[in-house]
View 1 (cartoon, rainbow, N blue to C red):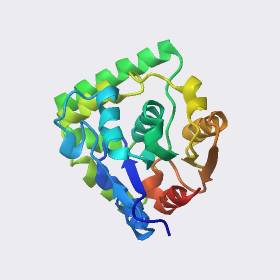
View 2 (view 1 turned 30 degrees about the vertical axis):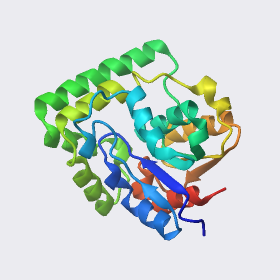
View 3 (view 1 turned 90 degrees about the horizontal axis):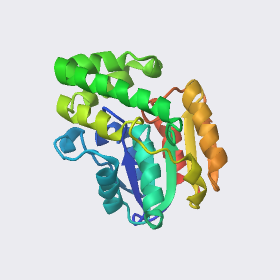
View 4 (view 1 turned 30 degrees about the horizontal axis):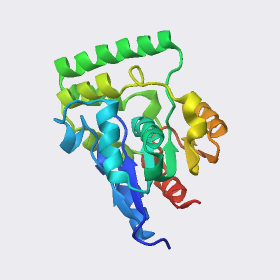
Length: 242
């Protein structure tokens, strides 16, 4: 068992809060970890913090991290990558769950930015509950068990429309600087995870693992995109791996 001095920082995905990590957090604490599950800007208790952009969110995370195991899911994984590149001395190990290093093609990035702006405007127009209902039925989350889906819905409703709209505009892949060409700078051990049923992100995970100098790849059998909800034990095991 590791000493409680080793800290694990868990970064949630878009529309979630730190509460989404409850099952992973429980296992990590049982293993002797000190666990931090912040609500990122635009979400949960941090919904009103401004500005919502990579510069400020990276600074927020770096202030928590000091020689930590840094784990991020989806949007949180992209933030974890940027934080590790900006502050490598603060990250002991990195765990990347269902995420990407960005969109390299500038035209595609522009299209995504425009699509996110449309979605942000819809959230502001229609309100949180209507958006949350639409978001939950995406094919990306089709494999969630009823209990996990209910927990995800409850967590989504801890947000507000203005915060999520700001997060789309400031933290989406359309505005994110792609960092594929910089992955070789990350010398710390990295665990890369994706669900075996999540074809898009499994392909991205394979590419990430191939570009990172000290990476392991885990394709979680029977799981889709939301691994920390579908297969929390697999994520918890990755936090423990050396």
